[in-house]
Amino acid sequence: MLSWSITFLIVALIAALLGFSGLAGMAARGAADALPVLPGVQLTLQSASEASTSFGWALDLQLATGRATGFRESAGFVGGGLFVARSRRGWQGTAGWRVAAGGVVQAVEGAGPTAWTLAVGTGPWLAGARALTSRLWAVLSVQVEARIMRGDLQPGSLWPAGALGLSWRL
Image (tube, rainbow, N blue to C red):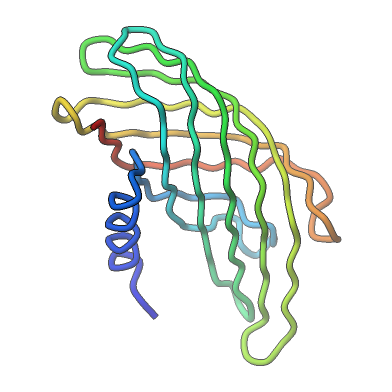
């Protein structure tokens, strides 16, 4: 199995080739109580503006996986939403709302059963960014979604997530 650092570099290369404007390491809530945090990656494609106050859209892909005693949980979500951003002197603050859909898979180690569920969610997100160069920014973001899942995992709950990464502007 590839280490997280090699996997992160491979995902970064694919993201750049596909035109994504941001890549971050993230931590998200797991569906299982035994996995309170799932590490993962977040790819983002976001409209950009040079104005001090701007409105725009953002699309993202979040992939996370984690292991607990006896099983592995993996989750993938595609999301999109709108935001307002304010920039000043190399700093930027962003607030937005997103809608996401995806799935969660729980696989018992060995030849055990696999359970999966579809999920949809919506909620606010906030981000702060600092310019490192004229085109490269360090970004910290947090979000909380109310998610509804099919099946018996958790019929409805709040799912917090946070990400730290880089954003580039072409």
